[in-house]
Length: 219
Image 1 (cartoon, one colour):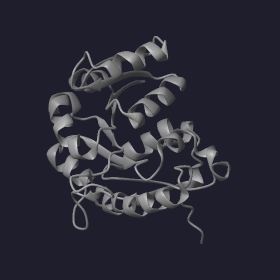
Image 2 (cartoon, helix red, strand yellow):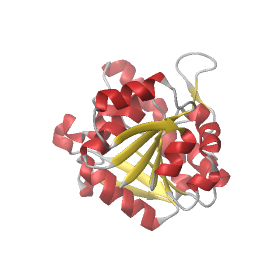
Image 3 (cartoon, helix red, strand yellow):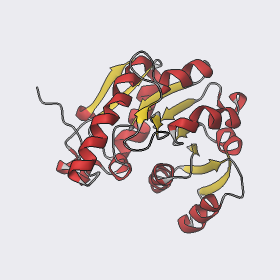
Image 4 (cartoon, one colour):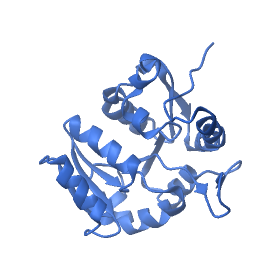
């Protein structure tokens, strides 16, 4: 499948590499087609299924789009990608609305009664926004076996049930997530909880000094 990745940071490159390994065609996008990170990624991938371009190029290319941009810039990046390039498609939102304007630790720019996932859905009503993987370290997103043999949980939410099933079957399970450990929390408003979890995640990261951890629901 053709997949567009918005964002050239660690998360974007990690997701792109994993998707390419799973046989998908991937175009990674940034503000400029001449972005050095884009060019370096394609050169390093050395794979005919890897290409690069602008946000708009990646959005037009992909049948599914991943938003891997910094949360503070996500809406602007998606506007540059273009509503016409996004309409009707599944948008997997991995971003978090972290606000670093007052230093560390960051706060959330939206929370409690709103979320970045909801803001994206409101801005692009014809896009099928699916929020997932935003509670996990980038390496763990694509290789859950790094912790407890993969026996821990990933969350997903969004308004479109069929879109969530596509992402579970096409992305999460091929990444190595066990079906029993994928928790569908419900509609896109549930992104509030997964985004607010970042405050605890950052505290744990600071204490453990590693991103190789996750939560497991025990009942």
